Structures are given as C-alpha cells and as structure tokens.
Image (cartoon, rainbow, N blue to C red; front, side, top):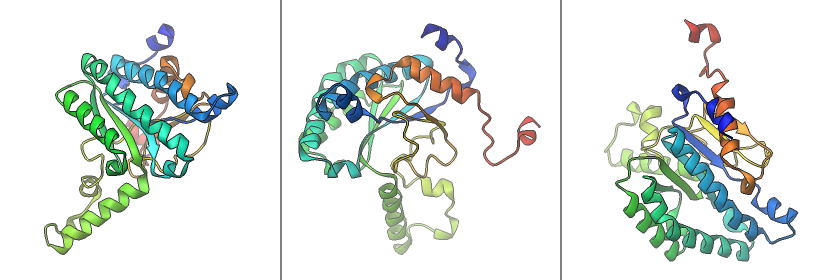
Length: 248
C-alpha cells in the first residue's frame, strides 16, 4: 500500500472525489448473510476512504449513500439502513472532529426519519468549523431530482422577476444545485464493476474521469483508492479539446 501511495503525484491530486458505493448486498450474499450485514461491513470502507482522502490532500469526498430509488427496497433493509446510519453518525462525531473533517449532506433530507435528521444536524453543527476534508453524504438523493428542483426554483424566481432568465449560463444554473458550494468531481469511483452512474450527480459528472473496479464496496480500502487516483493521474483530461491544444 505504501508503495502505491508513493506513486501518487502530489501536484495532481483530484480536489473532489465522488464514490458510488456498490456491492454490499452481493458481498453479504457471498458470506451467506443478510444484505444488512454487507451494509454494516461497508462502514470500514467509508472510514478507510475518508482517512485516505484526508491524508493525501483531497478536499471534497462525496459518497452516494442512499438514492431516492432505494426507498423501494424491502422495508426491513431500509429500516436497517436507517438505524445503521443513525448509530454510525452518532458514533463518528468525535472521530470527524479529531480528523478535522466537515460533514455535509445533499438530497431530500426531509424524507429521512426524524432521528436521522437530528443526528445529521448535530454532526454537521459539531463539525461546521472544521477546515479539512468536506465529507458529503448523498442521502435520499438522485441527479434528476436535483436538476428538477433547481429548475423549479429558477422558474419561480423568474416569475417574481428576481432573476433575469436571459443571463442564465452554466455557472448560474449550478448555484441552484445541492452542490452549489462544492466543485465538480474530477474523479468518480464505482465499485462492484457496474458500468453506470445510477442517477448520481448527473450535472456535475459532465467531464469527470470514471474509474470502475470489480472490488465490492465492503472490501474497498486505501490501496484501491490509491489505484484509482494513479489511474486518474495517468489520463489526459481534454474537456473537448485535442491533445495538441493542451500542450500548446
């Protein structure tokens, strides 16, 4: 692992890494256990990636923790996830404070159970003054929902003549998204080998480098994070241009 870390170029660390944490259920099934067992063991991966990002200087880490579509899963699994979320957030506040990590959330937070909202609010308040890594949990979140909510706000303000719709550009639109204070991700990691972005940060991922690994999320550790970053650093990000233009 240390050898991998040594290959990371300190002058090309992605400022923002987003992660689709996939494979908990399959991991549990391989162990002959219930799906919630996979979710519980996924906490180890969350800790490892958060620590790894903080250590190498990543400024923003966004984890896709629970999508709006996940509400349609079996009630027992959803209830177990919510209970796990409540307990984990409560337990991790001292660690977040110790490591200077600021907690943030995006999504339809009002749809979460009251105890979840209370613990999230407490954790965000407790870590609000931290100046290190910003850890954002995407909860009850979907990219289409976020874009639609932004459009609704813009239309409402345009009707009230608060804004001039003719002056709207990409930067203007971005200010109405949940991620208005967060730069777009340079790198998006998806575990479990699935080749899709699953309604995650649809606007923000326009030019993000994608890294897909077969590793199931509960098995994901710092070495896997380092492999993803090294892959990112060996790519040429052209943003619609050609190589010659970048070199010039």
